[in-house]
Length: 87
Image (cartoon, rainbow, N blue to C red; front, top):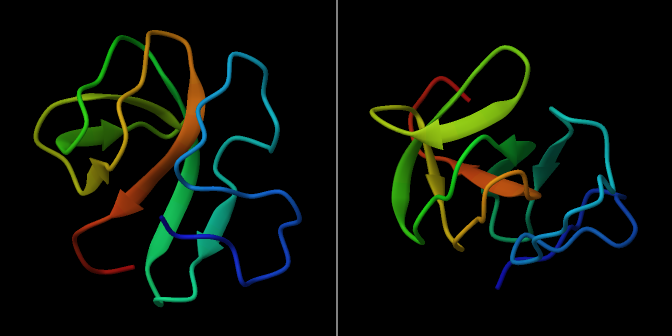
C-alpha cells in the first residue's frame, strides 16, 4: 500500500470513500515515485482494472492510462495509478 510522501496529509491510495476528501484531479507522488490522481468512479471498477480518466477527473473501466489498484463502487472517490507516460 502506497502512502503520500508529497505533503497531502491523510492521503492513502488504498482508501475509497463516498465523500470527497481531496479536490478531483489532485496529484500525488508516493514514496515509490509512483504518480496517482484523485478521481470519482462513474461505475463499479474492479481491482487491477485499466481505467480512463476524463478531463473532469471521473474514472471508468476502459483502455486508458491509469490502473485502479483497489476496487471502486459506483460514485466512490479514491486514487488511480498513472501507468502510461507522459506523467
